[in-house]
Length: 395
Image 1 (cartoon, helix red, strand yellow):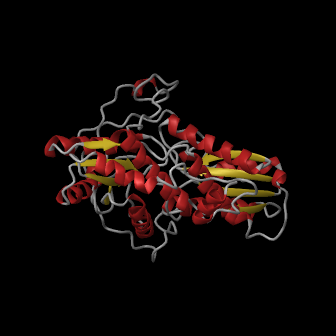
Image 2 (tube, one colour; image 1 turned 45 degrees about the vertical axis):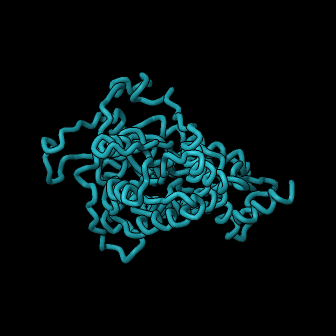
Image 3 (cartoon, rainbow, N blue to C red; image 1 turned 120 degrees about the vertical axis):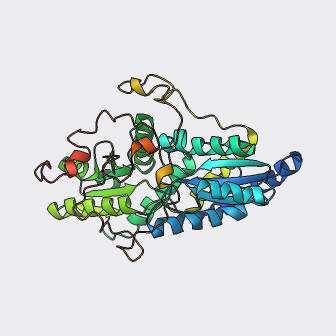
C-alpha cells in the first residue's frame, strides 16, 4: 500500500482494524477541496446542509447525535451545517431549515441520518421537506440513507474488533458466532439490508456462523433469536447492535443478551458497541453530501414496497407520502428515569410499546393518517414473544 493511503488510515485510527484489511474513502484526499469547488462552481446558489435525525427521549442519544454533527462540520467546510429531528427532541427539522435560511442559504442539501431506507427515510422526512419547500419556495435536494456501504461495514467491523481485543481467551474465529442486531422495520427491504451487513461482516472476519435478529417490529427478536442460535454449539457469541446511537433499544439488546447468557454459562457472550460517531460513519455522511452535489442520489427502488409489488406487501404500493410524526414533533421532554444512559427502566419487563396500539391521548381524526398493518406482527418470534403470558420456555 502506498504511504499516502497508509497515512489516511492512520487518520481514521483503524490501521489495525482487521489484519490485511484496509478501508478508506475515495474522497479522503481531495474531498475537502471538492466542497469548496462545488460552492465556487454554483455561484448562484449558497448551499447548506441539513442532517435529518429521528430524535429520542433519551438524553444521551440526542447528545451523541449532536456530537456527530459537530464532528461532521469541519469535514463539510465551508458549507454551513445544521441538524433537526423528526420527533421527541429539538431542534425539529423545520428549525434546522429555518436556521440555514437565516444564514442566507438558497439551496439545502438534506441527508437522512438513517441506516437504511424504510418509512422514515422514504416518507416521514420527505413529507416535512416537501411541505417546507411548498411554503418557503426554498429548494431542497434530498440525499440517500447511509445504506449498505463499505465504510459503514468497516465501522461495524471496528466495533467488533474492539470487543474481541478485550478478551484474553483465544477462541478461533471459526468457533465464534456473530449475531448482528438491526432496528427492525415493517419494510422488508430495510430488514434484508441488515442481513446483508451481517454476511459482509461474517465473511470479512471469517466467523464460523452469522445470524441476524431485530430489536422490534419484525422477527426474530433478540432473545428468541439468541435462544435458537445458542443451540448451534459455538463457544463464543458476539452480539453486535447495528445502531447509530444509544437508547432504550440498545439497552434492551444488552439486557436480553445477558438473560440468555445467564441460562448458558458454557457459552461466552460478548456485546459489541454501537456505531456512534466512528470516523468512518462521519465520513459516510460526508460522502452522501458529495453524492448530492454530483447528482448521484438514486435510491434502489426495485424492492421498495411503496413502488413495486413486493411479495407479502402488495397492499402498500402507492401509499401517500406523509409524515406520521407530527403529533410528537418537538416533544422535547427528556426521560428522567435514568441519570443519563438509558437503562430500560421505563420497560422493566422488556415489553416494548407496540406501534400505535391507540392507547395514546390523541385522536387519529386530528391528523388523519393510516398505518398499514405489518403482516407478521403476531409472528411467534416477533414482538409477541416479549409478552410473559405468551413467551416460550427457556432453552
